Image (cartoon, rainbow, N blue to C red; front, side):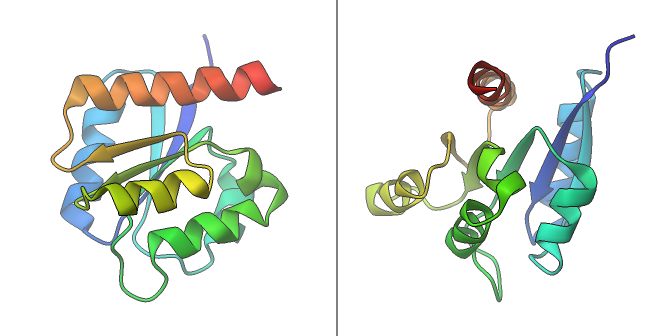
Length: 130
């Protein structure tokens, strides 16, 4: 039996985060952990060691771009692909996120097929690097 890939969803909207978890885990290939804020995020990432992080940009306190910056300064965070899943659809928001090294940007509401393809692509890119 193959080990399931680990996905971490970071989104302050609990219902959306749990819906993503359910949709992703339905494939049977992934184990999903949900984090509703950035509190102790680096510790969680070191404990879980996700293969991909799905990140919302609009969150109270520490926003998604700040989280990207935190991940870029952490040895595990730096090598973990980040896919932004956000309600923000402006080119400037996307540009800022891509400049911080994200692997993909999806706009809410997210199409299941696009989401799964983005996850698979991010995992493939990570495995190609290491």
